Length: 200
Image 1 (tube, rainbow, N blue to C red):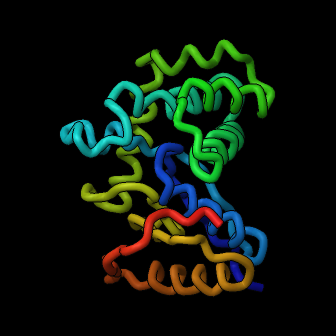
Image 2: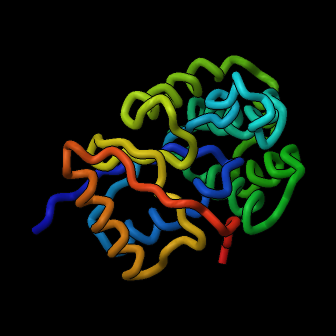
Image 3: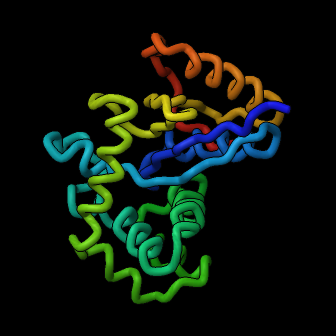
């Protein structure tokens, strides 16, 4: 029997590319023996020295990840994934732009107290978010974005899909990623992107 594979998956709910890669990862867990540890990476922190490259201003770019971090610390680590799913489905296939509404509706969906929304303005959680972002950089390199995954401890920026593979096709892509991750000297594979996000 094949050994269970472990994936660390770093996400920011603002990133459409991370969202599609996360949907691929969910497909993979259904058809391969894979466990995923869902963690935060912050676009706000990654781009703090390049404010023009943000989806929002620096403060707003931290809102969603702060609320998720607060929920995880106060109510349990399972809320990294639960709130990511709730926020991401609204932000990306749902097309919502109002971050405050995304937070309010997502907290209600997963059954968490509404007052957790106040965490969006609190820097109390920024050290933990920065530490998680730095962990992604430590395994995948400093010049990364989102999504970021580590397969059995070997980190990469990506993979980036549009749309995300489904079914056995998702499994075949995973098998390829696993093969690349198994080779110590592999660092980069990239081609130009000509399509925007396709959430179908």
